Image (cartoon, protein in one colour):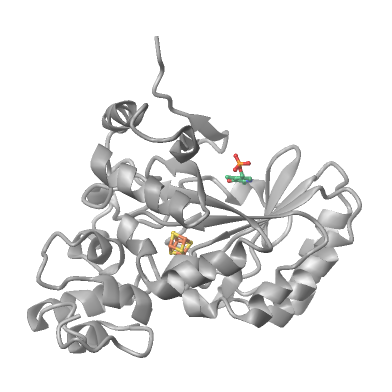
Length: 328
Ligand SMILES: *Cc1c(COP(=O)(O)O)cnc(C)c1O
Ligand code: SF4
């Protein structure tokens, strides 16, 4: 941060970014235009990680709006993972026989510029009402073939501990559920939300897997993040998921540093995602062949524990497909 003083509040507008010294005054009008289409949010933790003097800062690139967002490439689509046709009731996505997603809200602690749900996250209409949440939980109760409920969104760890505890209690009471999984960016993006009340809410009778989204080793450096992950490790098995992103982690060295940082903080790398073609994200695209080459160079350099599965979502809704690399 420029003046050595990190902001105390989440930055949510072009004016706030300019006032914090994260964008120059001449970039403010374009950023304001983008904000009307795609929400902006940088928490104090994330803002403090950015070096504004570095035009290629890998943290800034993930979160600061860019005029390129308003141009849609021919191959990009609003629902790249094809969730809509697999939504039996609002807030539920059921694509695989044994597991389904529950999206209680579409709010996030930060808004990633490459988000695959960018056309839906950050909108006021995303919260399930109490009645809608009830209906969604009833759907899980009525489908005994579902063995795993996956809370995602938006970010489920934004929910109040009370609401989260209520959802987890309802799910835990279902005899056919083996495990509960939560996907979240909160532990790295807004670690001070991991309070005692929140970790108490996460203490469920069913095994809890917490899959943490992080893309750069620097995201693990704040002391409050280390504390949050250490606390969470007492109640959940921690997994990591990352997106392969041009200018953020598109080198063997950057991925090695990222996966090593995850392991140091009790997080087992689970998936490395090929970028989903959401509108206005082309500047982040790393071709699959290049991704495979980066990973191939990593094999043997790092512990097998550091190795994620490189996957791509198929555009027809067929689900995740492992991309290799293959080893002949
Ligand atoms: C990604 C995803 C899952 C989880 O898949 P895993 O391979 O088990 O991590 C479940 N349901 C939907 C709809 C998904 O997109
Ligand atoms: S935290 Fe996840 S859902 Fe939210 S904006 Fe980032 S990628 Fe999208």
